[in-house]
Amino acid sequence: MKKLVRKLYETWRKFWKWVFTLPLIQWVAAAFMYLVIRLIHWSCRIEYRNKQVFKQHRGKPVIFAFWHGRSMMLTSGIKRWGRGGYAIFSRHRDGRLMAKLQRMFGLRGIYGSTGRRGAVQVLREGVKVLSEGNLLAISPDGPKGPRMRVHDGVLYFARKTGAPIIPVCFSCSSPWFQSRWDKYLVATPFSKIILEAGEPFYVRPDDDMEVARKNLEQIMITQLHMLDIEFGHGIIQPAEEKPKEQ
Figure (cartoon, rainbow, N blue to C red):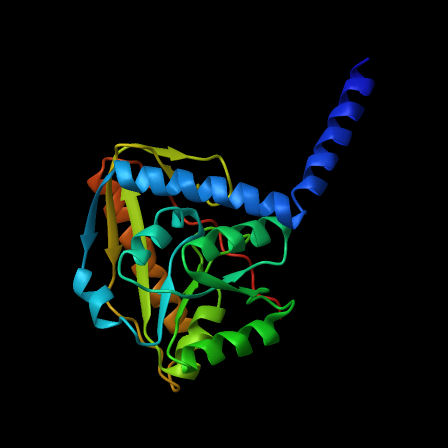
């Protein structure tokens, strides 16, 4: 009996995984998620910190960098400042769903990864959109981690184009931290939210990439920790770094 139940469950799960690959279903799911996020945004008290950073880089090429687990309220917050642009999404089912959601917030998708697979095309497209004066949003630890560890792609974009990296993060008074690799934070209705823009971080052509990576990583980790401490949350530690391939 247990084997039969397990088999039925696996069949049901595979069916729904397939269903969610259908574009129409993804658009319906994205529309529902969009409405939920907008309602939460409307119900919350939001404090924008370093608003001048958003204002100073309006209409200019800029890279907004955020940890994967802190993406939920950022796009709706950025939309307040009238910025559209581009974001990088994986080609996986979940990535395409997120691309449809973010399209509703004004961000168009670049599909692929800044890791080895498909990296060249993504890097070319990212450099192109920045060179045209657009915003590029990227989670340096996405889409699969390790958590709160910067991949090199964001540094490549900054060095190649001269565009500044703006670390952005949010935290809230009543969070729901999901049990995922990225400790994804879901803001709940009627919370207080702080959405912060950090100071511009530049990567120059002669900079040591590993030093730049560690510096940016520490800035972004500190930003997240300070916001969480302000609300009395526990400290979320970065995952262990994966050893670099020789």
